[in-house]
Length: 296
Image (cartoon, helix red, strand yellow):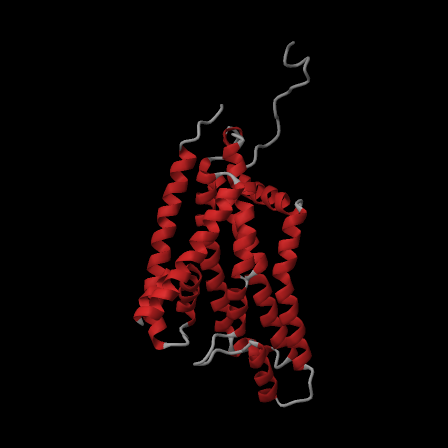
């Protein structure tokens, strides 16, 4: 049967740039996640804490009390509108508390978004189109980063806007603009590190169970070991084994305020450690994708 008889015809329109394929990969990946009811449950669990923070901030700011009294009540709840020598600001604390939900969501997303492409051998067919290997890698990293943004950065910025709108408005936002910058910096570290680590791990392990077990172990066990060694030896450097703490310290470098003076020195080591691991993971991911044969 000839190609015309089979109703197959060449494309006569203007071809899009291959770089636009990155956004298609992100869109399809997010649709894959949103179509699964289990992931909706995890997203709802992650946003439950945001709703709690939002409600408490709204309720306290409406009380007929002096501003100092309101801030004291919020601090007792665990939220501080500023950063002082005893605690981080409430927005970064909120993002740090979201780490558990982020870890769980990413653990189950790795196989769906990346592992299935290698396990079912569909990646060669994607790459046979006008989508290069670098576009595939960037698209998957942005897809994972989007999930992290939904659970951390966007809610934290929403809380920052809410508190300013309910208190002094522009005055609070202008005087504390560095807090918003710190949230964005911390979010960038979370997105870059977690996306590269997860996509690289998923490209090699492929199946859901190995990915979830390995991913959770890598993010939990070193931190527990570092905490034990720190208490046993009183050496703060052992706490660098905790990936989540390293990400927070690295994100705080731009903000410039730390609960302990010693943390500032640790932050540079944390940044170097995260950067090194991320570079190695990225090189491993590039090597894995390059090994895929393309069907022309």
